[in-house]
Length: 429
RNA sequence: GGUGAGGUGGCCGAGUAGGUCGAAGGCGCUCGCCUGCUAAGCGAGUAGAGGUAAUCCCUCUCGAGGGUUCGAAUCCCUCCCUCACCGCCA
Image (cartoon, rainbow, N blue to C red; front, side, top):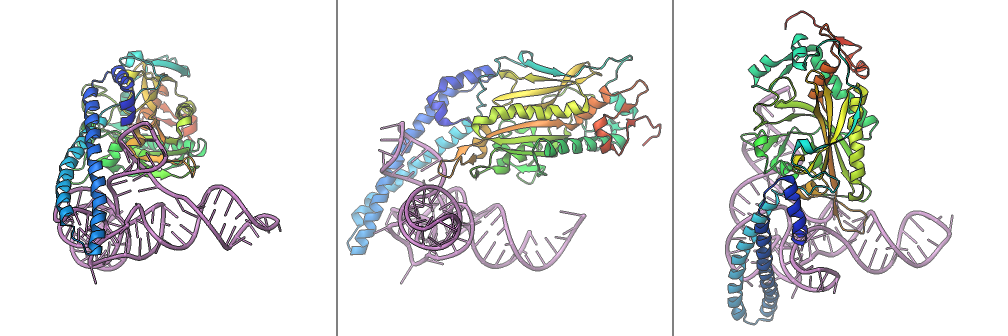
């Protein structure tokens, strides 16, 4: 959420940001409403001032045994007028809040202006895509052949875009989670969190999923609870409505969670394989930072995520998203894309964003720079560190052998109990 | 789910026959004084949000929302949460 005072002071900046993002928004309506709100507010406040004064006078008169009935009559009218105007004020405030909640964040000045994916800027590559002397298969074929990915039974149990992972595949999924968490907690300084997988609507508002993206969420019928689409939601909202004491920042947290997304509107996309699932696992990184250092923190966070892929030996590239391709809450986003030989292209496996104070304002997360200073909003950052299912898919494709077996990356062998290869077993199950 | 108790400032804790209470007192914290050092002691300060260019000023906030009243932390209604006991349960 943007600061209303900022919009008031520099509406052209907001207008430009909206244009660069490809958003249409009735900014003039908002400004007009803001003006009316403040006008009415001034009226109410001065009437209240009058009422407060007179109420004290009445108390004094009564104490002296004088008759205050004249003042009482006057105040009855004032009180009615206040009630009437207050209705208007709260209506306007509600409308302003609703409008404000739909304005996306302002892109950082270093973000390229562009309409969509094609205008993103590649900033670096790592690793050499392997040369195959056979035709590399897509991961879903490998997974089915090894009997570790079971799409039919996933669909039977739930619906399409749900998959059952079996045997050494499940073990590999678990190994990846543990490997990523260990890396971030022991080497990158993140604190491990195991949060709820369901959160309430207030938390969803705080990180920006609500109200605009409600159709992307799974909701519980009888409770004000939603399945989280990413651990960013519970992690970022950890300090909702709090003022962090001096010296708290930066805070680094990480969590493994399952993530749940309805994927409304991506009907035809990535139907095969485990790239786009309704339920998937992810290890998430979240930082709370002082405004002055948040962009350094973003660069570090991207490196933390990249390190996962380096250790796994998976080639990738880092892409700076343009204004038109960024998420609603982000001021600047880097995507990390892993090389998928079976598809012959790079696929997003991590997305790291600096939301500046956009989410902090929504979730009311502040800190005190020092005991004497006023609270300020923190900057919040989030990034995948990284998407587990997509990593598993990338391993299957990058480490596949001609005979259909898959080599386990060296760093994962301890997590696999010493197993170095997943080979077709021939057994059903 | 049932019954009972309770939700006040960073923390503890006063404050109900409604009136000058954003709120006593204590702790903590900040600054100063004092003191070989530390502890103790003394003095001052110490919530958040909004309106305004802004110190001042004004308004709002005693779990949330609504009501009664000239006026509510204090009265009424609804909801939420916490704690205790019971029931159920991984």
